[in-house]
Length: 382
Figure 1 (tube, rainbow, N blue to C red):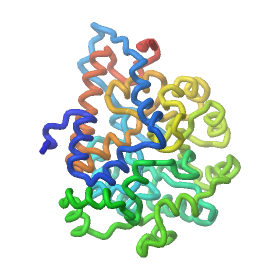
Figure 2 (cartoon, rainbow, N blue to C red; figure 1 turned 90 degrees about the horizontal axis):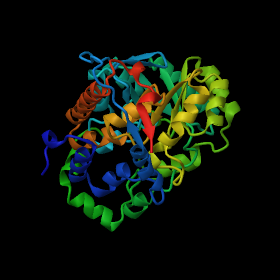
Figure 3 (tube, one colour; figure 1 turned 60 degrees about the vertical axis):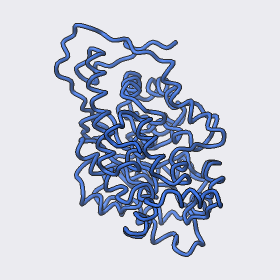
Figure 4 (cartoon, rainbow, N blue to C red; figure 1 turned 30 degrees about the vertical axis):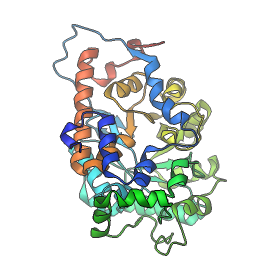
């Protein structure tokens, strides 16, 4: 059995998570949509871009800090909001938030999070992002924003690429859902990983505190799939979002922007940030990689709005390439979910520590003292 101390990169954490999680849960984290071509392309896109290092520049001290949507971060990597974290480890969002606080970076709580906004706000001082979906019930949308404001959330992040769920065929094969509706093969996977089940039943009951008052997960009549198909509003449009931006009256970010035209509209309606993202390849398979779209979007709106970036990031060099193209900060999802599943808070802390070490080392090798010294001049595309 592999140990946490033997994990040195993304792939090691993934391997340890696979050893510890039942197959259906591991594949929920690990999988993408359809044939997973976009999922693979997200990381592959970095390979077509090379770094050009400068030498003899004097880089004893390196400053990794950045400011994103008014939030000061000690490093340009943040933990993107992801759903269902207490399925992966019983500490869930608590572990991730505490690790993010230790490294002075931003942390996101999902509408489908398993720890409440209020508890996280009391637990840590690190900047908190609240990710939410647009519901058919406009009153519910406002109530969720009011709750976030009352909890002290600084940044509202509306996911705009998930008006319906992606076709995640790995989940269909195993029967993964909330509540569980496992196939025989899925049940066998749970049986051969008994420690997960022991942890699951000996800790607090699974819940979705942001949605408990709005969706009943307890009697099997509803599921996450039902939530996406019945409660989310596919008719969401720019006017709807503009009204929400005005209602929030603060830092407001759209996650899932992939075109120049949409980025310009986001700036026009008053958003203060966008995340260039294809949801880690979990929504529209065959869509372009986030990295391939980054430069043209930064060129179009980078002087008007903070441009963040995610999907496919596995290395410090990936982060430096995105920052060199103009991203203000880079989000990771699977990159912290695997170490969370593998070892809880110590796992996430080890991952963030390794990422910080990579960034410091790579910045020195690039000949840069601070992030603002990164530019397209130190990149070449093949």
